[in-house]
Image (cartoon, rainbow, N blue to C red; front, side, top):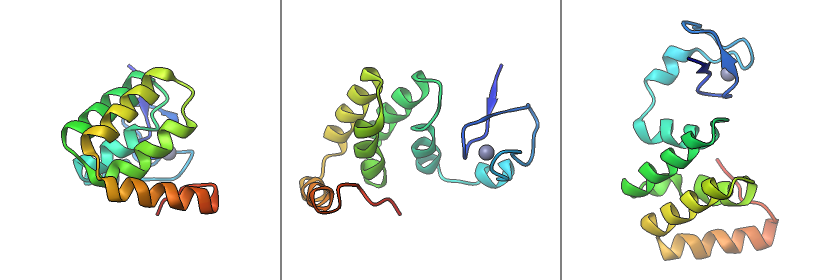
Length: 114
Ligand SMILES: [Zn+2]
């Protein structure tokens, strides 16, 4: 079984406390909310993980995840991930937010994530 840092998603050894790549302490990440973990999982290098994470975020109607899902549809080259993100966005759908996001994209050319 392969282990990944839940911050930078690089491969690490099982039981590693501090990621040698980004320096994040894994036990700090353990305390994150479920939603935050799912948002992080959207960047996972194993394609089935972002698909599953997007699906769950859609089921939970996690509005916090919307900017990340929208970004994912733009940066991901995996059609399954894009499809999962799009259907999740539809489930969460907040029309005002989507319109606002599209306006900020046309203005800046990029979505600003906090
Ligand atoms: Zn890391």
